[in-house]
Image 1 (tube, each protein chain N blue to C red):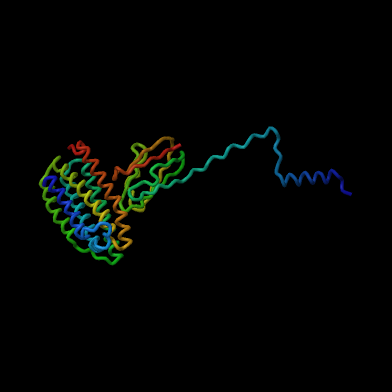
Image 2: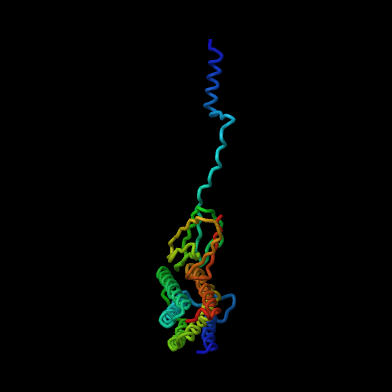
Length: 184
Length: 118
């Protein structure tokens, strides 16, 4: 998958979220995804990045990439468990939505590509994907999910998770900027 | 009739009890009190060290507490390393020398902090 297609996949994520909000600007909360859909989106996004990380742990030989991948697996698993626990406390059952479905469908292509690559090509694609993925996720969390969350505890949890996603993005960009870190 | 010097003696004895002993001109000055070690806390929250910059003294205790839902570390190469610090866990370091110690989370390398030890 070339960069243009990959980026368009994540642009589609934002468009899906925009469609859930009927393209609204400021008044997102009234038309945005429901709390159940938000939980479904967050769980899908976390699961996908955990899976990407596990592929990287199997296929990458770069210390920097493997450390990053392990971080993605550990951290996104922690967020998953936190969201699952919160949803249970709130009595919210995760719901699928066009957004979560779109994420899962996009992940099929990315996963196939990751499994077809080796060496530096794998590392470059994996890290480039992590940068664009986290850019899309942090953008969606900030512009749609947080404003749309109706339950205060869910909103607070999203606000608490956002710094983690932003640090992941910073970390991925650090590795992306230093291609020598991906040397084997 | 009470002898005057008896009353005067009693007065001196009483004043000694009230005002404490009288030092002679040759008494040594009391040494300045040594400040007790302080305890400083740094909260790890929202993937930040709070405060990110802290001034402490040799012998003080610095305690980091992880309030995030993910594990962190506190690593200053060749100086201190907390190893894995899970959610809710704390770790303490007591500096034994002065200096400026830049540290980071080994898991999230954009998380940075500095200890200035005086």
